[in-house]
Length: 285
Image: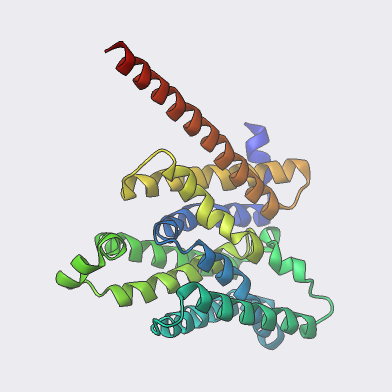
């Protein structure tokens, strides 16, 4: 028990732990819809595109404005991609690639000009142990607002994701929900910024949901299972990083990867045994 509780003795580690818990809930919830809508590439591009907002916010307003700056950059990218995607002559993934790579390049250049004391890796791989009270409150507000949106629009999201024609017939505005999901993705990436950074955000967005989808088929069940998996992964990664003196972000990401591979092997072995069992019964009949 002491091994689990020791990392949470200090005030800064308690703030970090609380942020981890919020990320462990929000990222799998949003990630479930990102996975179902096949927007994993969008999540990766979004996570990289925030660097420009981070750099400009830091240069103009200081370190306390990093998360708001990242949020502005994320929402800007979400709106830009939604508007450019209306032209059906250009594929969505092409729009994502163009906008995402452009914003990432701008971010790298901006970070290089801000201050030589600011390390690029500081933002790429997370800054969990430097989370301050303002960051914690911003993360809390964004998490509550995002979870409330998914909760109240859950059925509309299902209809718009799986049957857009029916969504139009029953009055669900699928285009608006598409835009809202992109903004929600931006918010989630910003929330993940402090824990695993821009590079590794996609691991928390996609991996818990993908792990849950190996065993479950209903959206609600996948969501709850993904949250349980995500929470266990971020807590495990945080505790292991503390005791092994490792960077929390990459450690959490490695844990998510190990869990997914292990779950995949278990699911594959189980399915294979069931197939052999049913084949054997069929041959006996």
